[in-house]
Structures are given as structure tokens and as C-alpha cells.
Length: 165
Image (cartoon, rainbow, N blue to C red; front, side, top):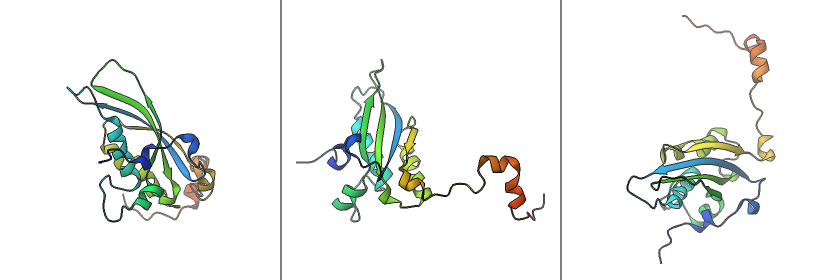
């Protein structure tokens, strides 16, 4: 029997997720297929989840069952938005993304949360991110912050620029 939906993605809820080990990302998703009254949102969500976490929706040698179980993005919330257009599917979706995929690599984390997944839908919007406190403390943040930049301390402490205009 062929499985269409991966259980490691769909068999979860927010209450069952370890909030200290997962980032929760909330998105708005809207899709339209003219002439198609049943739009398989779950198939699209599965592709989004896998692209955002393991990097591929296709099975490859490195994409083992263990990788899928520990690192695959998990759908923890699907809230359909009713509308009058029978060719449109709209929803707010929430994914849990394991912090084990990036450790302390902010660019990779942002790419997973707000990167390649946006190629799947013109109307995919990131609404919110909840990052565990244990992960947040590992990032020092900007050197000067907004107040430091506005006060000019950033420019006083910066290396001199030898640019020509």
C-alpha cells in the first residue's frame, strides 16, 4: 500500500511538541487552482514541511527514516479559512521545526523557516516565529542595537572607512 502522507509530519499536535527543542513557525497559505474544486492542501503542506526541514520531498539515500523522524518538520496546526471561491484553499498552518537541524546557525535556520518554502505558493506568508529560550540565549544579537545605532556609538566604534566616492 502506498502512503500519500508521511505520518512523521502529520501525526502531531502543538501540545505534544517539546517547546524547548522546536521552533514554532506560523504561516498563512492560500492557493488557487482554476477549475479544480479539490485542492490537496495536505500534499502541498507535506512538500513545504519536507523542503523546510530535510531539504527534499523526494526520498534520497541520506534521507533515512531516522532523519525523517528526528528532523522532519511537523505540522502542529491547520486552521482552514472559509471562503466563497470553490477553487481556493486558505489556511493558517503551524510547523514545529527541530532545533537539532541547525544548532546555532542563524542563516540556515532562517533559510529553513523563510527560504525555499516560499517557492511553493505566491501567497505563503510567515506570520510568527516562536524560538525556544534555550536557543535564544546562544545568540548575542546585534553589536549595538537600535539605540546604539541611533546614538552614533556604532560609527564611533567602527573601523575607519577608506572608501572613495
